[in-house]
Image 1 (tube, one colour):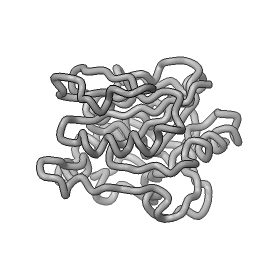
Image 2 (cartoon, helix red, strand yellow; image 1 turned 180 degrees about the horizontal axis):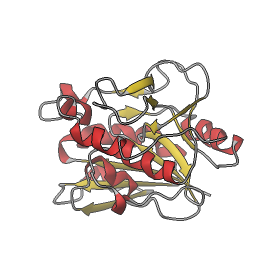
Image 3 (tube, one colour; image 1 turned 60 degrees about the vertical axis):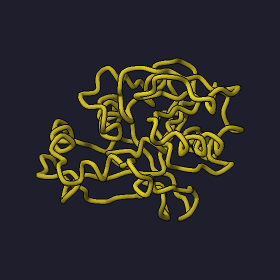
Image 4 (cartoon, one colour; image 1 turned 90 degrees about the vertical axis):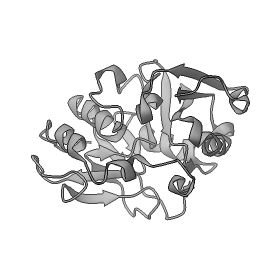
Length: 232
Protein backbone atom coordinates (compact mmCIF):
# COMPACT_ATOMS: atom_id res chain seq x y z
CA UNK A 1 0.00 0.00 0.00
CA UNK A 2 1.30 3.42 -0.97
CA UNK A 3 1.33 6.04 1.80
CA UNK A 4 0.11 9.35 0.39
CA UNK A 5 -0.41 12.72 2.05
CA UNK A 6 -2.93 14.99 0.38
CA UNK A 7 -3.45 18.69 1.03
CA UNK A 8 -5.21 21.71 -0.46
CA UNK A 9 -3.90 25.24 -0.09
CA UNK A 10 -4.22 28.79 -1.40
CA UNK A 11 -1.55 31.41 -2.23
CA UNK A 12 -1.93 33.30 1.06
CA UNK A 13 -1.22 30.08 2.99
CA UNK A 14 1.79 29.04 0.90
CA UNK A 15 4.36 29.54 3.68
CA UNK A 16 2.13 27.63 6.10
CA UNK A 17 1.87 24.73 3.68
CA UNK A 18 5.64 24.38 3.32
CA UNK A 19 5.95 23.74 7.06
CA UNK A 20 3.18 21.13 6.96
CA UNK A 21 4.94 19.36 4.08
CA UNK A 22 8.27 19.37 5.90
CA UNK A 23 6.64 17.73 8.92
CA UNK A 24 5.42 14.68 6.95
CA UNK A 25 7.94 14.54 4.12
CA UNK A 26 9.95 11.57 5.42
CA UNK A 27 6.77 9.60 6.21
CA UNK A 28 5.30 9.81 2.71
CA UNK A 29 5.71 7.78 -0.44
CA UNK A 30 3.95 10.61 -2.28
CA UNK A 31 2.70 14.09 -1.36
CA UNK A 32 -0.06 15.72 -3.37
CA UNK A 33 -1.06 19.36 -3.19
CA UNK A 34 -4.21 20.77 -4.74
CA UNK A 35 -3.56 24.42 -5.61
CA UNK A 36 -6.61 26.68 -5.34
CA UNK A 37 -6.29 30.05 -7.08
CA UNK A 38 -2.63 29.64 -8.05
CA UNK A 39 -1.56 30.88 -11.48
CA UNK A 40 1.83 29.17 -11.40
CA UNK A 41 3.66 26.43 -9.50
CA UNK A 42 5.71 27.87 -6.60
CA UNK A 43 9.35 26.84 -6.33
CA UNK A 44 8.85 25.32 -2.88
CA UNK A 45 6.56 22.64 -4.32
CA UNK A 46 9.13 21.51 -6.89
CA UNK A 47 10.53 18.65 -4.83
CA UNK A 48 10.84 14.91 -5.10
CA UNK A 49 7.70 13.09 -3.92
CA UNK A 50 5.46 16.12 -4.55
CA UNK A 51 2.69 16.11 -7.15
CA UNK A 52 0.59 19.23 -7.68
CA UNK A 53 -2.62 20.09 -9.48
CA UNK A 54 -3.81 23.60 -10.31
CA UNK A 55 -7.56 23.46 -10.84
CA UNK A 56 -10.86 25.13 -10.10
CA UNK A 57 -11.34 26.37 -6.56
CA UNK A 58 -12.31 23.36 -4.46
CA UNK A 59 -11.44 25.07 -1.18
CA UNK A 60 -10.43 22.59 1.54
CA UNK A 61 -12.08 19.75 -0.40
CA UNK A 62 -9.22 19.79 -2.91
CA UNK A 63 -7.38 17.38 -0.64
CA UNK A 64 -9.84 14.68 -1.80
CA UNK A 65 -9.01 15.20 -5.49
CA UNK A 66 -7.12 11.87 -5.68
CA UNK A 67 -9.19 9.88 -3.17
CA UNK A 68 -10.51 7.30 -5.65
CA UNK A 69 -7.00 6.03 -6.42
CA UNK A 70 -6.70 2.37 -5.38
CA UNK A 71 -4.16 0.74 -3.05
CA UNK A 72 -3.39 3.74 -0.86
CA UNK A 73 -3.31 4.72 2.75
CA UNK A 74 -4.79 8.13 2.00
CA UNK A 75 -3.88 10.79 4.54
CA UNK A 76 -5.63 14.15 4.44
CA UNK A 77 -3.62 16.96 6.00
CA UNK A 78 -4.11 20.67 6.67
CA UNK A 79 -1.58 23.37 5.90
CA UNK A 80 -1.80 24.92 9.38
CA UNK A 81 -0.91 21.71 11.25
CA UNK A 82 2.50 20.23 12.03
CA UNK A 83 2.60 16.45 12.23
CA UNK A 84 4.91 14.38 14.48
CA UNK A 85 7.43 11.85 13.17
CA UNK A 86 5.34 8.81 14.19
CA UNK A 87 2.10 10.19 12.77
CA UNK A 88 1.73 7.87 9.76
CA UNK A 89 2.69 4.73 11.68
CA UNK A 90 0.34 5.58 14.57
CA UNK A 91 -2.71 6.12 12.38
CA UNK A 92 -2.01 3.13 10.13
CA UNK A 93 -1.76 0.92 13.22
CA UNK A 94 -5.16 2.27 14.20
CA UNK A 95 -6.57 1.24 10.82
CA UNK A 96 -4.94 -2.19 10.95
CA UNK A 97 -6.54 -2.92 14.33
CA UNK A 98 -9.87 -3.00 12.48
CA UNK A 99 -8.53 -4.63 9.30
CA UNK A 100 -8.81 -1.21 7.63
CA UNK A 101 -12.62 -1.37 7.77
CA UNK A 102 -12.86 2.02 9.49
CA UNK A 103 -11.72 5.58 8.96
CA UNK A 104 -9.24 6.89 11.54
CA UNK A 105 -8.93 10.49 12.73
CA UNK A 106 -7.57 12.46 15.68
CA UNK A 107 -10.55 14.85 15.71
CA UNK A 108 -14.28 14.34 15.60
CA UNK A 109 -17.77 15.19 16.77
CA UNK A 110 -20.78 13.29 18.03
CA UNK A 111 -23.97 15.01 16.91
CA UNK A 112 -27.24 15.47 18.70
CA UNK A 113 -30.18 13.76 16.97
CA UNK A 114 -31.07 15.47 13.72
CA UNK A 115 -32.67 17.73 12.74
CA UNK A 116 -30.62 20.31 14.60
CA UNK A 117 -31.12 24.08 14.53
CA UNK A 118 -27.44 25.01 14.26
CA UNK A 119 -24.35 22.89 13.63
CA UNK A 120 -21.87 25.15 15.44
CA UNK A 121 -24.23 26.43 18.12
CA UNK A 122 -25.96 23.59 19.88
CA UNK A 123 -25.87 20.73 17.38
CA UNK A 124 -22.83 18.94 18.76
CA UNK A 125 -23.16 16.55 21.71
CA UNK A 126 -19.46 15.74 22.17
CA UNK A 127 -16.32 17.15 20.58
CA UNK A 128 -12.88 15.51 20.50
CA UNK A 129 -10.20 17.96 19.38
CA UNK A 130 -6.95 17.04 17.68
CA UNK A 131 -5.07 19.69 19.69
CA UNK A 132 -6.40 18.48 23.05
CA UNK A 133 -5.95 15.20 24.90
CA UNK A 134 -8.29 12.35 23.96
CA UNK A 135 -8.08 9.56 26.52
CA UNK A 136 -9.85 6.67 24.79
CA UNK A 137 -10.74 5.43 21.33
CA UNK A 138 -14.06 7.01 20.48
CA UNK A 139 -16.52 6.52 17.65
CA UNK A 140 -17.85 9.77 16.16
CA UNK A 141 -20.25 10.92 13.47
CA UNK A 142 -18.15 13.72 11.94
CA UNK A 143 -14.43 13.32 11.43
CA UNK A 144 -11.73 15.96 11.35
CA UNK A 145 -10.61 15.40 7.77
CA UNK A 146 -7.26 17.17 8.12
CA UNK A 147 -6.06 14.57 10.63
CA UNK A 148 -7.49 11.45 9.02
CA UNK A 149 -6.54 8.38 7.02
CA UNK A 150 -8.40 5.62 5.21
CA UNK A 151 -7.63 2.67 2.95
CA UNK A 152 -8.86 3.62 -0.54
CA UNK A 153 -9.73 -0.01 -1.28
CA UNK A 154 -12.19 0.04 1.64
CA UNK A 155 -13.49 3.64 1.71
CA UNK A 156 -14.64 5.46 -1.43
CA UNK A 157 -14.77 9.25 -1.30
CA UNK A 158 -15.81 11.12 -4.45
CA UNK A 159 -15.41 14.89 -4.18
CA UNK A 160 -17.60 15.30 -7.28
CA UNK A 161 -20.54 14.32 -5.09
CA UNK A 162 -19.89 17.09 -2.54
CA UNK A 163 -22.63 19.72 -2.48
CA UNK A 164 -20.28 22.28 -0.92
CA UNK A 165 -16.50 22.51 -1.04
CA UNK A 166 -16.04 24.50 2.17
CA UNK A 167 -17.03 21.71 4.58
CA UNK A 168 -14.95 18.66 3.78
CA UNK A 169 -15.36 17.28 7.34
CA UNK A 170 -19.12 17.00 6.82
CA UNK A 171 -19.09 16.02 3.15
CA UNK A 172 -16.56 13.22 3.72
CA UNK A 173 -18.43 12.02 6.82
CA UNK A 174 -21.70 11.83 4.89
CA UNK A 175 -20.12 9.54 2.29
CA UNK A 176 -18.49 7.40 5.00
CA UNK A 177 -21.83 7.12 6.80
CA UNK A 178 -23.55 6.07 3.58
CA UNK A 179 -21.03 3.22 3.32
CA UNK A 180 -21.80 2.23 6.94
CA UNK A 181 -18.16 2.59 7.93
CA UNK A 182 -17.26 3.58 11.52
CA UNK A 183 -15.14 6.66 12.19
CA UNK A 184 -12.72 6.23 15.10
CA UNK A 185 -10.85 9.00 16.91
CA UNK A 186 -7.61 7.66 18.37
CA UNK A 187 -6.35 8.64 21.82
CA UNK A 188 -3.53 11.17 21.86
CA UNK A 189 -1.99 13.75 24.15
CA UNK A 190 -2.38 17.50 24.03
CA UNK A 191 0.51 18.89 22.01
CA UNK A 192 0.89 15.79 19.86
CA UNK A 193 0.17 17.98 16.83
CA UNK A 194 1.58 21.43 16.28
CA UNK A 195 -0.60 24.28 15.07
CA UNK A 196 0.08 27.68 13.54
CA UNK A 197 -2.85 30.05 13.88
CA UNK A 198 -3.57 31.31 10.35
CA UNK A 199 -5.86 34.11 11.54
CA UNK A 200 -2.71 35.82 12.82
CA UNK A 201 -1.53 36.15 9.22
CA UNK A 202 -3.02 39.12 7.35
CA UNK A 203 -5.59 38.03 4.76
CA UNK A 204 -5.75 34.42 6.02
CA UNK A 205 -8.93 33.08 7.64
CA UNK A 206 -9.94 29.64 8.85
CA UNK A 207 -13.15 28.12 7.51
CA UNK A 208 -14.46 28.00 11.08
CA UNK A 209 -13.98 31.76 11.52
CA UNK A 210 -15.61 32.43 8.14
CA UNK A 211 -18.75 30.40 8.83
CA UNK A 212 -19.24 30.65 12.60
CA UNK A 213 -21.82 33.40 12.19
CA UNK A 214 -23.66 31.66 9.35
CA UNK A 215 -23.58 27.88 9.51
CA UNK A 216 -26.78 27.41 7.50
CA UNK A 217 -25.08 25.29 4.83
CA UNK A 218 -23.36 23.07 7.41
CA UNK A 219 -26.63 22.63 9.30
CA UNK A 220 -28.47 21.84 6.08
CA UNK A 221 -26.00 19.07 5.14
CA UNK A 222 -25.93 17.51 8.60
CA UNK A 223 -29.71 17.37 8.63
CA UNK A 224 -29.79 15.22 5.47
CA UNK A 225 -28.64 12.20 7.49
CA UNK A 226 -30.10 10.20 10.35
CA UNK A 227 -26.69 9.65 11.92
CA UNK A 228 -25.91 6.26 13.46
CA UNK A 229 -22.99 4.50 15.09
CA UNK A 230 -21.96 1.38 13.22
CA UNK A 231 -20.65 -1.85 14.73
CA UNK A 232 -16.88 -2.03 14.82
